[in-house]
Length: 615
Image (cartoon, rainbow, N blue to C red; front, side, top):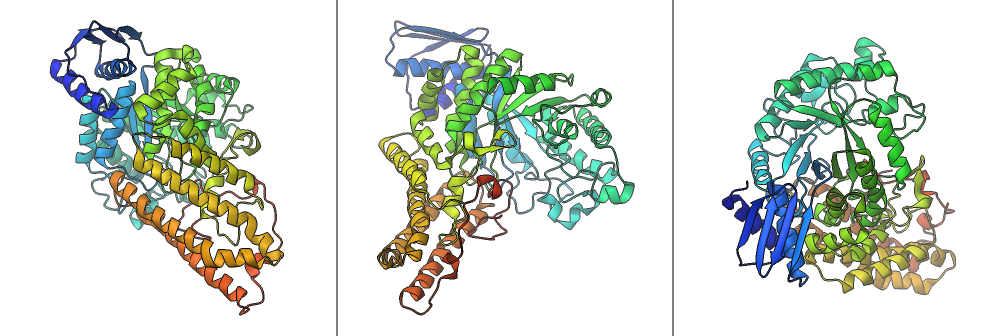
């Protein structure tokens, strides 16, 4: 039974978050699942745990807010764990108070599972360069997060890397003894296991959970660097399994149950090294050698239930407990793609319900510098929470209601914002998957004279942006500063679409009126808008994230602004006849399919090759 003091603390967190006040008495009773009753002004909340109590309070608030005088609600989760993973390793390390705020939203939705994805952004005794100048968390900060989460019924599961994705640490010579390639740990090296022991020991100090995620995904080139120099070629299945066995031993030493991403087992069995290859085959003898670990099937791309069904079945053949890691699309740059989150994750949730998957969570990656604020992704959470509590009977209306009431956004508004990434459906396939082409990011950062979007005519995209901006302007929600940021991004992108579409034809056709308009008005206006957005974006960053990482975003704005200054000088020289030709506009433009040029993703914007983007 939840104590009165605990219930009161949860209520005093959930109600203010929702902008709801209630001074009446709320009776609490023991109940399996969630029970909410309101009759003749008497409120009753039945719950077996803190998470159920938090969601019960939210449901009570929602129905009273909607004007209902009498109601009874009963819910029971179909997932034992339902939550999110916040990426803290791509530049943006959320402040402790910001993480607490996120936990509060999760609890209100009845989500009970949080991972902070930390590659090297936590302090590690005896490894001073681990997370150095990266905004790493102290053990005390992680403990504070864990205490608050526990008070709200949320389990914080440490999520680290024990094989790949350690390129930020491996930049330092301190890491040389444990480095295979620029991102992969040297398997079989005792110093590697001393490092991993220190990692897992630190996680035990910080968190009370009995589970840990040890990563090990996308370890391309494992065994092909210093390992190959020392030992020659090795069977990659054997190498991974031997390494995993050592890692699981360390986890057991610190009383952790490990889980890991599953992709490398499938990639090794594919002729194309593709995770989702339907023809891949993991040898039975290799399956038998996989140590005692839970496997996370991650998938953010498919839109058909049949795809998820087949891939879940393929995972279940490995004979391990399977968790599902979906995605709320926060990693395409500047704005979230909530529309595609719905398109991809609803069929995924349906199949998780049907196939008996008991643990699901939504990854919220921050690829390429975390230029999309995690709080802009809140509208994706209800896809997961509502399937947890309604199963396959969950409707789109269930989800949209929670988007509005709990997260403070409007679904139609966020679907409009998603047009920033258009096109992102059928004409954007990559090896058979739906894949982003980062169009909005390309437009926003594209050099106006070089046009790196691959398209000469962006008028259709400009129209979409104009329509999206109009929708956003008409909405009012609980996140005015973030939505002001959204409007400014769209406004700049509209201006960029116009310039990228009209500049080259104007130059080729000697349309001096348009070129003079650019010189005298448009470039100055656009530069001012970038500067205004820089100022707002900086404030938002400093409110939600540690200062480390902002320098990358800052550099992009600076490059863009000074390129516009340079362009104005260049155009002025042309207009007054100081130069006869603008070489930047004199070559033949090639219409480029999205897959022929891709920016964003895992590229580092600190390697500036054009206005902040890396090819």
